[in-house]
Image (cartoon, rainbow, N blue to C red; front, side):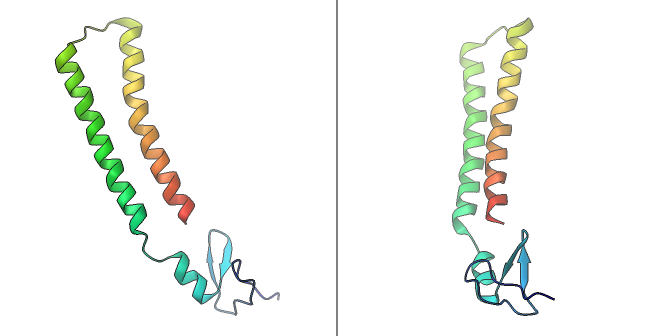
Length: 100
């Protein structure tokens, strides 16, 4: 049986090695990888604030302009309004997944 080495320090990780995302870590580096990330949560709060800001902006634009969209213009605006928040969430969760 081969000895697992830490992917950070390349030292033997021992029989109780920790694995995360297909990588092997020693106890010291596993603790560093899984520690709290306040920056990620701050970014999440900013994303939620940005989503709320986007919604308020759209509501304000509709109230101010009162557009009367029909046909393909309505479909196009609907798709754009659906895609923007979805892309923001995908970027956020991709970033969180990358940290794991």
